[in-house]
Length: 286
Image (cartoon, rainbow, N blue to C red; front, side, top):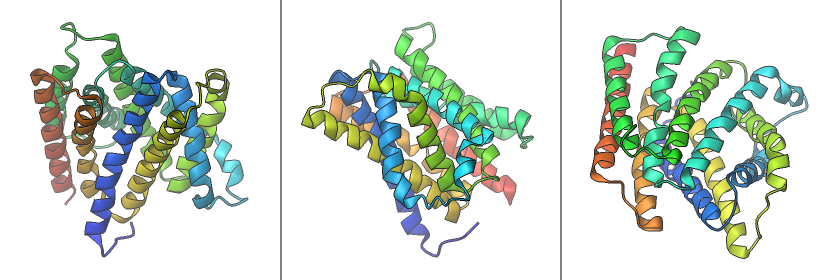
């Protein structure tokens, strides 16, 4: 891995990415409140993201056939599942609660990767992630007020865990920008029939939200990819959990909502267990 002398600049980039990703979902929620359907939000985000990133993806003629390789097709298909589910969830649920349920993903990825990719698991890390799962349960409250929207958020988290495993699987075969642009292009083509038939009224505010949703999401993911090339995963990974703080802030300042006390406790449990799990993982690798 290429190490950067300016670690603080790269950490600042990661922090900005953690703001951009929930910002994109905030814009998507505003789009749906204005009348857009979730599948249009998905399609427009993928299409505009692809158009924005294509000029800087440095795709050459030799790489073009690889975009349709079965590994990248499978990854793109898996990617559409959590993206669609989380936007359906955001249509009715508070953004912080949706992100809390969504963080079931790293827990699923940890155990699935142990089976599929033969990654090492330890008792302490497993215990910490199970504590994080307890935090997710506090957020979604299964059987005690769990809504349909939060069920979609849980599904998004499960699918995202599978997507994280798929990322690790394809990372050794393709360069990062090729992986990202292939997912955006394939996804936009697959979702085109659904998106084109549900185009909302394109007012100036709607157009602004469409661009913001796509640009924030695409730039956030690109910054994570670029930072991950220059910093060890043990440094990058814990910052992923700051998305929960950003999502809570957007929920309050944009929508005037805050999670209830039990959900806030759950969010804090998820953040604490996530940071501790990655701290333990970094110590184990030394």
